[in-house]
Image (cartoon, rainbow, N blue to C red; front, side, top):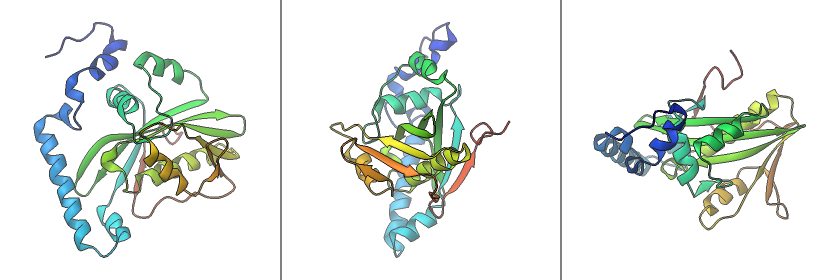
Length: 230
């Protein structure tokens, strides 16, 4: 049993430093890790027997749950933020305290993204955060674990961001891509996202006068705080 700090505000950052968080499902033990690989095998088997990628994606029955950052998902969110490289828009790294400070401004929002499908629950595998500036919003964090890349979760996250910003009456959504040695998969996704791309600024933009549709076959579940209700 690891020694935990008396100060509860340090709990998440302490958990994040434990080596048991280095594997995908280590927090739940080796049994969960075996289940993860078994589920992935079943997805692969299904992919080989369906007629198209679209049919495969539809048959997965993927569900995306969007929830506010809280004490339950905080440690995992920090782990994703600080260790995910490939599908990571800005690759910024923050401590728990730095994240708390960043969130204190009302113009900033951050959500943890939970994914599950007919074969299993992947848990918190994504992060989406926004910073609202006058009549537009900037996507600050767009992070997704490599375990779920390519299942249209990326598009669902962008669609949620566009829908949320449209509900606020904003004019556009921006995503500034910061190139690193490992996040080219993120760039490739954004190039295919439908957003317009400004090469000089490395910026992707979507005008909210247009509807950004959710991908077919994916159900979106919002926490009460995520959809703005009380």
